Image 1 (cartoon, one colour):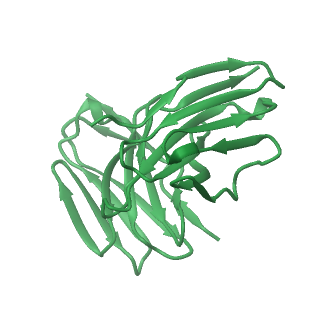
Image 2 (cartoon, rainbow over the protein chains, first blue to last red; image 1 turned 60 degrees about the vertical axis):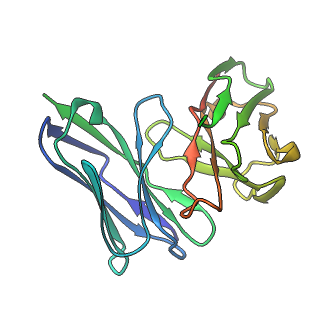
Length: 108
Length: 115
């Protein structure tokens, strides 16, 4: 079967660093995406990993280990506006499968 | 560049009524997706179009849901008749095979409430 696991909720303090983990088991692997989704809004693309290693983009970084079926999204210098759900999605053989999302709350 | 456009943003109907959602993808994107998202869940694929052709509709409840993408651009998703359990957000996304990772870009969604 296909399964993507990520924590349901996380909290962090403004200015801190937070790591959101994602583990997956899918039929085939053709890349892993992270999306940010604010309440009532569309998911917006954050990052894409297809090879092992770290991809850095400003305050956000994403890591992938294909052998472990594992990824994480690292958010640095947290801001209040980072309070949102973060969706891990894996492209399997023919479609994109989404996790249930991790709701991050950033407190002042 | 304009993003994915969806309308209406909100729709409230009574059960057994029909409803339709419209999507205009990003210009030049040949692949269009319709997703359903329940509260607290990730999006679930309903149907995927490559140009005018529906290449994956395995998750579309065909007894009440239908979709079309005439001319390979705009798309319409219809539910007839709607049931209480259809209350959700319906998201449209598009992607281009020319854009490397074929990243999907989402529209704002239509929030459907069935009473």
